[in-house]
Image 1 (tube, rainbow over the protein chains, first blue to last red):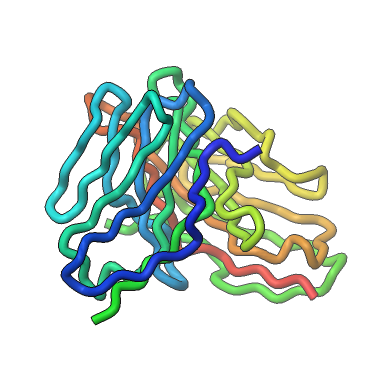
Image 2 (cartoon, each protein chain N blue to C red):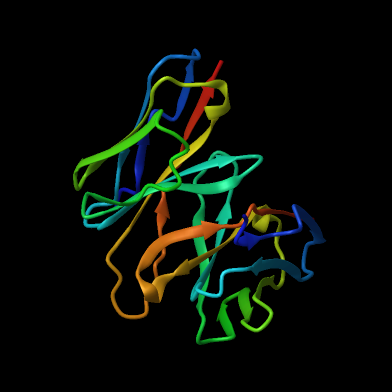
Length: 114
Length: 117
């Protein structure tokens, strides 16, 4: 029973274009969402997050959008750079109800072509 | 500042042997998590601790797995006996007690790559 789903295992985009990574969740109790980035042979690192009271959060080239009614979030990277090539994990938590552990999706491998 | 430190980075062991993975969380963090990454299941939570006390171990696959946190700066994940299907990358992560709107970001170690043959 996957509560957080990333249905696209991979995505390839050209340098300078927009990358859009998608994530769906099923548990309506989730109230905080995060994106992590993972390079080979390294641990995941935090990228950006959004609370369920917002619908958009922006940090430089990275923007996360949340559509609560659709239980969908997306990560936009503009412009994409070759260094962005990595696996991106979507994660969700029940932060405001005290459960600190994150539930992760299966990841999307992004390849940015020079 | 040192991040989450895990050891060993790589372990190859024979089926039936005991495996112990170790973790030192970031100093001052109240939460410690053990995750496992496999191709089939992605990143799945095994167990997490708050102030050295196990809070949720529902992700521990079976009795062969056990985790301890004897103090705030050390945790172990033990598999006894190990099986080939336990081959995976095991990540330890830690998180501070959140303040304000900082969110519940968790910080991962580099992982322990386990191969059971």
